[in-house]
Image 1: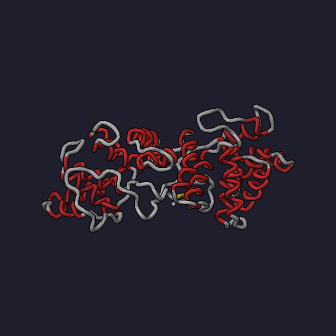
Image 2: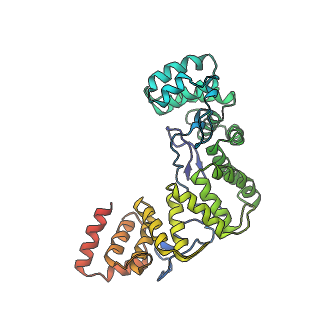
Length: 356
C-alpha cells in the first residue's frame, strides 16, 4: 500500500497499486517458483493481488504552500501578494519559529496561504511542538479557501479519520479539486482513488489522465505507473514497450527502486529497446544496494550467470543470502548455496554481512 502523503503524522492514505499492472513482484522468486537459469524474468502478467508502491520520495514541494510545481520558482504571491513575504522567507532559511510567529498573525486574520504554512510547521514540528490536531484545523481552513496543498492534506486526513471525522466522499472531492489545480501528489492519489473505486477498464482510463499529469510534473510514482500502463496496454494506452521503458528510465533516475529493478531486467533481456547488459546490471545494483529484496536476488543471478559483469559465485551467494534474510527464497539460488565449499560459504557470509 502507498502512503502518498507528505504529512508527517500517521499513515494517512493507503492507496492501491494498479490492479491491472504487472510489477516487479517476488512471484517468480519465492518458494515453489519455477527455476530460472540463464536469463532474468521480464515483467510478468498482472498479479491477482495488488502490489504496493513505496511512498513518494519528494523533497520539499512548493505546492504545499500554493506554489508552483517542483522545478519552477515558488509563487510567493500566494502568501499575500508580496514577493518577499517574511514568513515564507523565514521558513526557507530554516527560521521556523520566526516563520510560525509571522504566519500565525496572518493565519488568524484569515490568510489562506499563511494558514497552510502554519499547518505545515505544526504537522512536522518545525521549531515548535508537533501538534497534528491543530495542524488539521489550519489545513481545513485553508482548504475551504481553495489552497490546493491544504485540500490535498485535509483530504488525506478525511480518509484516515484519526485526526478528523472520517469522510471518504468529502476526501474524494477535495482530492479531485487539488488534482485539477495541478498538485502532482493529489493527481497521483486521485488516480489511485479512481482505481480503488473502479478497478476495471473505465476506472483505469479515468485514472490514466491523472497519472500522466503527475508523471509529466516529475513524480516518480506516477512515472512508474505510466510505464505499467504502456507495458500492458491498459488505461487507454496502446501496448508500447519502448514508451514503457522511457518512463522506467525517468522513474529510475529519481531513485525509484522498483523502476530500477524493472529497468535493469528489461535492459538485460532487451525488452523495449536494445539489450544492454552492463547498464542493466548497474541499475539492478543500485536497486539492490538501496534495499530492494527482489533486486538483491536478481543481482545474485546476474553475478551467477555473468550477465553484465564477470561471473562471481561467491558474490552471487552473498547477495542471495542478504535477500533470504529478508524472507525471499529461490530454489535456483538455494542450489547455488548447496554447491559451495565450506570456504566459499564462509566468504559469502562475510560479504553478505558487509553488504548490510
